[in-house]
Image (cartoon, rainbow, N blue to C red; front, side):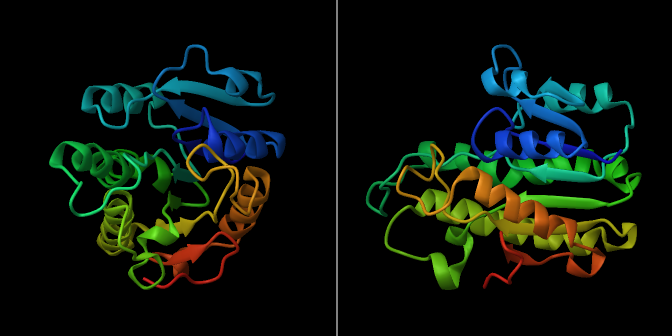
Length: 227
């Protein structure tokens, strides 16, 4: 039975990832900051274990890695992310608003991938998947606003593309995905995709990945995304 680890699994895309993988017979390791009172996540049937993990807290990460005790992970999905204040323009942006988003969206995925590289290396699939955004594409996502979120996803893409090269000798593939514009708390009700549609497409694309795809930035349907 393959194993998937999903961060930010208590809502939105992470919750839908957990539902679909559990329904498909995978062993699911689901994380969220507070594992108590997780609502729908607690109701998912199948082989699923919920762990508390604050991706921005080093002691929390250390405890989580220790609890896994070297368990093999086939697919690690860095899904946890935040948007930060909306409608931010250059005249509005502050360090206090910017830094927490950069920490969650760019630093934490690398730190988690680094901490669990040995676990992923033991898996059969050997995949580290990072949920990015079209707003992290300079060609497609640049506009005169939302500096905080856009820059955090550009940074995520660069950091993980670099990490893909650094760990190439392990044959662990590192890939970034735009999930589409999805009807979540972040995407809003007018988005074009439901979580089910987005994650169904993402799972299909993830299933087709191999090491030759390491370092790539893709749309949820598997087509290339411009940097």
